Length: 251
Image (cartoon, rainbow, N blue to C red):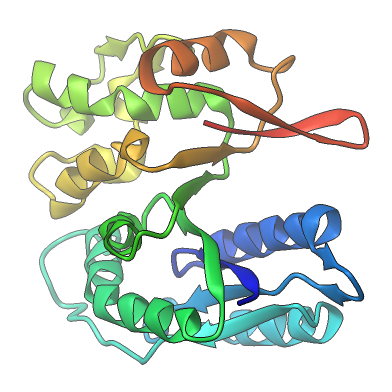
């Protein structure tokens, strides 16, 4: 049975584009199998944050990269009138897609051996799905190692603090391997402890439970952050080298 990789971005265009670029990188450097390209499937949600730009973008990528295919999940609607942030509604939408992701992986597995399932950091609800199917499941973190180091330390920060960060203008956090960060400058989903998105954010920061994390960095750029992550959250680091340059790290 032929191998394949499945990628699963969160709904917004920026996350879709980043995941597609990862797919292109994998095809360029690892995609050739004899006289044909290694196939990659990208799962796309439908019904939330859908914009015409995404459709036209998918069409252009599909024409340019025949080994990159897109599988649209069934449309799901969410209640936009809920008294919570748009981020919380988006996170709920992703969770509601868990059964669709399971079905897609099962269908793809009938024709291919899924050698890796790569998910967006906000698609954590799919982590257990990949694990249950015994598919190696990795996170794709599009930012650098310093923000990843801070992100991985967020659960401990949650345990040690009270109140909402948006109400603490004078509080400054010191994350190991990352610059000082004011509480009010935390990512938007983490600002309001009363919003459901905050609790999702705590769950999403437990990336170390996956089989690995793909990070958009290289060792000479963020040596301190990478050492902190390696020492505290992982068991090994694999450097991917492209044209004699380190372009990303899997942890």
